[in-house]
Image 1 (cartoon, rainbow, N blue to C red):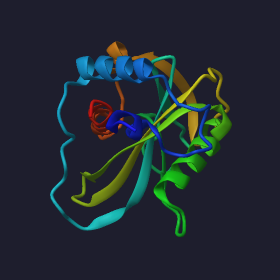
Image 2 (cartoon, rainbow, N blue to C red; image 1 turned 45 degrees about the horizontal axis):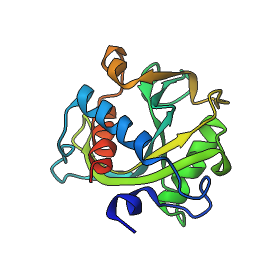
Image 3 (cartoon, rainbow, N blue to C red; image 1 turned 45 degrees about the vertical axis):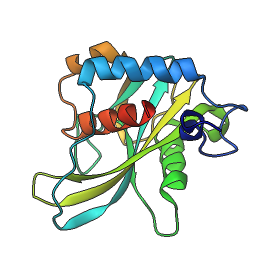
Length: 185
């Protein structure tokens, strides 16, 4: 198996045999690089660790899913986000990512046409703490999503228009860059 194919192989039960089409992943990666630039995500200097989380970038037909946080969440209300969650004790980051994806969007493992693990990032927050972020990219053919209470709305955004969405959480660009950078390897 080539290194590129290995990057797209994550969970044997995810999607049809072969996962996402190579050309689809590559087109998405090239478009993201054009919007956000290439290169590794910035890693935060080590500080007090706040927690371990997953961040899943969900895509549909080459578009990125942006999710507007609801007023019912304790943080980032009203801001554009990706699918996220704390890694529960006893769960692997990959299992937690799939769980969060289902809880927040209704997308099941069977509805994924690709699922890829990205790099692990250490990102600083505004108070100097550091979050360990396990990144993932998931591809679905399901356009309509079923949101839970964490999000008010969502948009499928062409990569070249991502910067037009004001009110993104500060770390979203780092996560998008990390997933795109990993896809180029």
